[in-house]
Length: 299
Length: 158
Image (cartoon, rainbow over all chains, first blue to last red):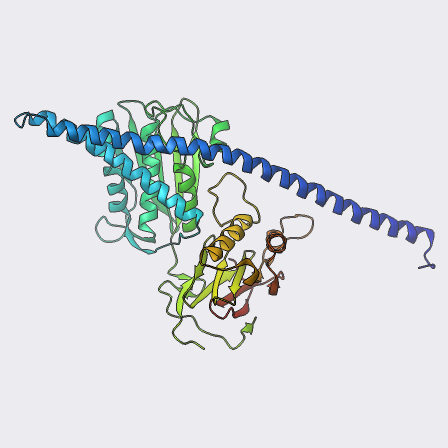
């Protein structure tokens, strides 16, 4: 040590100073991270309690309508079938909504519990998407909104295109996007669902001509429990989970979602989804071939 | 060895705890898995998280270390484990992207740090580990004995 000349000594000192500085910045960085996390936790607690009140509306209101309407049907004169039909239609739409929201909530609970995993099969994409859209038929007809499917895949047998993915999750993704599009569309407008494939990646987009989303809001719509209360038809409905569930589901399937929107000029949500591999990193989906290797270390 | 164990493949962002003897397999890159073992009840649990801390925006899922660790410990307790009987083994946190100190991504490094810090805070001893490095790992975890078979994988993208 004592043999250092001035230049070397300076260098050592400078190095130590730099090292210390880098530790300091790291500590600073970590404490900032910690503060941010604490803030987020607090905010999320507040959102969660807000969510509980939203959700009880979401469940209680449809139930009240269903109970009231079915009671009313019981006391309607038997000849007055037109009245009965219209009430049954209302019951159906309330029950449909309830079912859809409950599905979302249970999936969110499953994701948060770490119990979700891909369930891959060959899926007929056209029929899956068409079924997803059709399930909103009654709602969309009531609102005078036309949902059209633009299916741009020329492939496979006849008009069917098969793609390896998780059908249940994909269906929920589509339902959520269509539901949102309906919620934020003007009466008597159009929603266009487009499907295409590019290099083994499945794309589909849902385009509405509704209110659109400002750039600022585009950043927060995927956050859980966040809702933007500008929906024309929304009557402030919803629990704010739809898009965060969509994102989490796509995460499980290795997909992605992007938004293109201008305030007042409609929104387009585009999903990209790679085809699932049957074999996940050397593991077949049915779980029957876990081999031991010679090279295994044992802990 | 392979008396008919039930088998489970653990996907990222999920976790698994079982009273029945299971053989759990998972593949780790920069992700980290914590195996918790209860010698008294002979039950085990494992998580597989991708990022260290929850950002507060996404669903609060076990994709994030701080959530995955809390949830795993909770689930062990739910199955009857006492905290003092639980031991941990941690794996993963490799640096497959070859990040350097300058670009400060070091997800693997930060994942490991969260794991060690939180386990210490909760009071669970780490009895074995294989973390860091430049390679991915394949691990097989026997939930009843707590044995982990571990193998490095040749560099690939995960």
